[in-house]
Length: 427
Ligand code: FES
Ligand code: FE
Image (cartoon, rainbow, N blue to C red; front, side):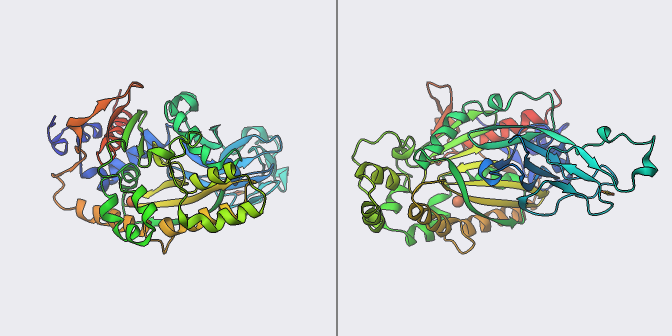
């Protein structure tokens, strides 16, 4: 099903994305990037926090919605707020900490102070403002904020559809992802960030790109035990599939036996690498059934869920992408564990996470090398398209209505660009 070369399409930017290929300019053109901020990041639901990052009244974190700095808070009533980190006096940021606990925020410039839900509480030396300023008129700007399954999203668009509608069929997979915490609340165990010199969509494409795995992650495959390598050898597994879920979301299933951790037919052996933990948990009085459940959930949920435009729930961690400029992107990796479960299980999960995603890991640094190279190479001959056509002729549709193909196919990327095109269109 070839389409016309989209790099030759005249008119709006939306014409630059075809069904099975997109123009290289999508990675390199600052005008397109500016338009993406307006039409995508200022309009749709953007992930801002996991609720365990702001666990108590007064907890806050800072991040961005697109290129705009925000503070995400839990106020005295326990409500989540997303506030623009921009003083209403002359525009300074009112908070410069990554996270913490506070009663409110005081701008360092002239000390206008704000409550956790953004109301302007105090102005020093207020006499000069008599008759010219009503504090009620100058709160921090609030974004609409909603959450599902502990995942907090914000949008600038007061009219946008409810978050649950935007998530659509991704909700089923979010629920499945959370089964790896074995009945305990999910908790961010730790996080680290990297920046790569490339456009945000290069990272967006990667989460459901099973095709690169055996090539780019050869070193990681060589560094793990045989059982783990076997679990991730999905090239010839017909059950390893990518589904397009609508709204730009997609899911790549790599280890089907872990998709629903409530289902256990007993055929899967516990990996020998976890035997030391089995011994420790037995000694601590855990039942064989619980121990088996912990061990089966150790690598996570067996799939990567990509939620358009900026968050992935990927095996056992979250991957957040924050666009910095047309050719630079920040990526946060957040390890997920149990809030209240056995600490030695959480520790082992962290070690597995570091082994792949860590700064000295065997996985993510190799991904980042590929992303950098895409950005450098895409500058060459902008008339040549970026191809996302792998598997386009072998896609089928599931009973749920999801376009589906093998996990090595580019079904997830086509779904992202379908949404990109819709949001970048004039109508
Ligand atoms: Fe914030 Fe003046 S800029 S108080
Ligand atoms: Fe990768």
